[in-house]
Amino acid sequence: EIIQEYAKNDSRIQIVCHSKNLGTFEARKTGVIKASGDYSVFLDLDDELSFETLEVLVENIDENPDIIFFDIQINPKPKIFSSLPDELILKKDVGWSENCLRILKCKNLNKGTAGKAYNAMFFKKIYESFEIDTKEKIIFGEDKLLFLAALLLAKSALSIHGATYIYHKNITSITNVSSDDVVFNKIRQLTLVRKHMCILLSNSNNSLKEIIKDKILIKD
Image (tube, rainbow, N blue to C red; front, side, top):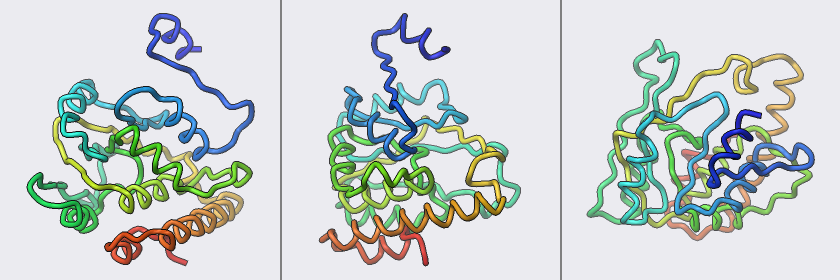
């Protein structure tokens, strides 16, 4: 109801709904296909973007990179300092391979969708690379699958500061709940995601795919 009220007063807001729950992967895929902007940013319902984030992103899209990495703030802040991610610094005067290695070597880098903006055409290309049936209903781990595909297909990336994705840790999310049923479902979902990761890797001719595999692929 809240978003519907906003949509009534702003023609830029489109509400897209599936007739039934197809899972997070299909929901995001539909959003990417329907979006008409030059770049796309995912925002989970319990997270937020700092006020200036979209403005800062717009100021940095002239070079048309496939991926823009920006800052992430975790709430509550991790108690262990070593669990905080390193600052990612990508260079404009080097090729994609070197910057890709910088991404992979970045300690505790978020491997999900947080803190990333994707070029719209590139994003659609990513989703076209998947061979996933809607009946599989992927709801967990799909963000890492997306990140793997992005690294395999990207040709350029940019890292910026001044834009912030604010991630709120939710103790009731599937990531943090540990009941027997949830654990079983996690294992089933991760097994499914790993299968599709392996398909992407086997179909890729990226020279860095073995390094990407070592860093990103969900282990058995």
